Length: 361
Image 1 (cartoon, rainbow, N blue to C red):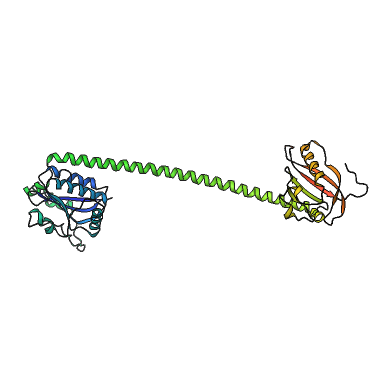
Image 2: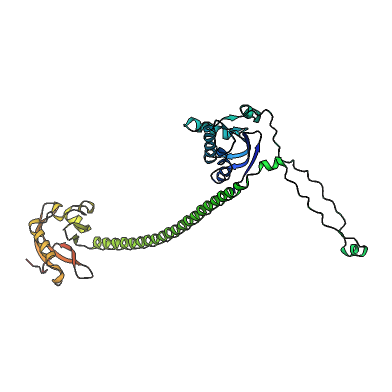
């Protein structure tokens, strides 16, 4: 938690030294403002900030000093910073370069007080730490023995330190305490509100993170399912291709647009067209010896008839093989049907007819 110590030391009729120790930032600047804001309405004209023990200061704290400096200038005085750390000096220089308020800086307190009419200033330093001594043992008292001898230990009276006039000058006026307490309570309420907002934002972030983790797990499950289905489809595709290539006839598979899906080894041997050249292209553009003007209407008619026709359709055609020789063919067309009995392609098997084969014209 950030801490700031503020000590006011009047050193003249119109000069006040403000000794700061600790850290001055957005959290502790309201504490300093509670001491500095009433000064423009008092008889103080010069404020000297003793910053030798100020370990940290950000732009919020520096802006509070600049506000007091401008208020002092309006009444013919100023605010100066003495014995500042190098980091604070650089921050003041940067603010001045960017058009901010130029706060005077002095390396020593006498230099800072030179323009205020105060010649001697002695700052009471913090008490020196007492060196630790070695542990020693002492004899524990026996209450029963003390009661037997009539010894009664009296608790020493706490000596009250009287308030001297010098110490009384350092205390705020009685009416100022309510203002200081109000400012401190306001600052504490702002901190609690900011803390509540941070807790709410943190809860929202945790909820969003949990949602993202759940979505990521769901996406992983969907991806695993798709990978498994893809592997199954690849296996079916490989099996179908091996089945088609293993048939002795020239087998091809067309989709509903008459594009080649599968081109068997028998078709390669019969027409001299490799599978890589045929797959994906329309049947009519392959340049085979098939009578396109006859086979295309036949394919369209078979596709238009749907799967209502029972069995395969067989016709005889005259074609020319890859060697340019006339070749009579028996072409058998079968539907590719789905589970709902809707056709979406054809299987075409072509073979050279043998005596006794039946066919349709």
